[in-house]
Image (spheres, rainbow, N blue to C red):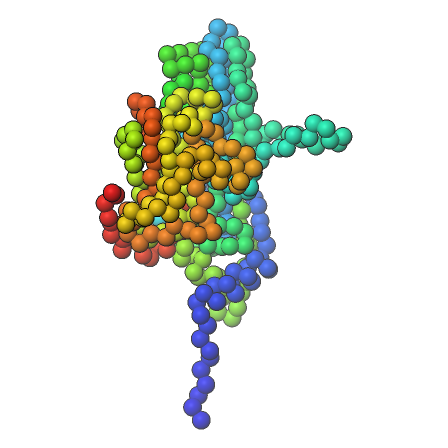
Length: 395
């Protein structure tokens, strides 16, 4: 009788089985790995070495800085993303030196809101509720609306920086129980957290002055206090062959990237290309056209429409900006600042094969000098095929 062979398990099924075993039996740990006080004016970059243990899901980062205005100094107003801009950049380099995350504090904050279905770490108004529920832990997220002369205030923000898509969906998780390999989380502090009220100041600073002609005077940005917490699965299940791991999940990169794209021309389609070999789950766009008009970045009438267009000029959608804003309102039950648009595609990702085969189109009716599109991407990518990519020109 011919020898019998073991049935071959489909890789996708094996991945789901391993994922289920980890989620069901591993111990989820949340531990502080770094606390540091640093002066951003002397050294803005903070590099954290994560602990090489378990299956890393992500990091919680809390950043705090005091802003003071001397007597006779320039009064300040908080910007639309306020304390989220305490971090100018967030980068994560994995064990193979792939840059999985290279984005900004505002993008992390906006994505945390979209993923959580509400403005991140916001408290509801409970004015008529007879118990003392409310914003009792302002150290999670705070900033005064204004800082007058001879006054000061703390700006503080908490971020969740994900490596895995979620605690249950482990795509993007990093198995860190290795030797002879390094990874790093790099935080760039915003040494220019106080700026004049310009287009760039409105998007990049924490506080700005009354107008573009008024430079900050008599203001002090204190040292930053940073606390980093690592979230990971420990005590992973094992078999006779070793640790049980979801290999397809580990071969997937969960990318968060942000870029600034200038060159917008009034009444012309402006294409924003989606890079190749990825599944895009969401896109954030800030049309930075005005310095904090109505506490935002643009007027509603500054854009004619926003569209998603394929390489053969087929529109997946083409709608006025208020309907794109409605997608954000439906997601977080609130509006993002004016000029900020959330395009959710996680239920049907934008899958790209060649660079330029899918474009997000902005058509602006009003373009001020220095206008730019700030674009934040959330995507899945497979590490071993990204290098095979080709490209197409945007139309």
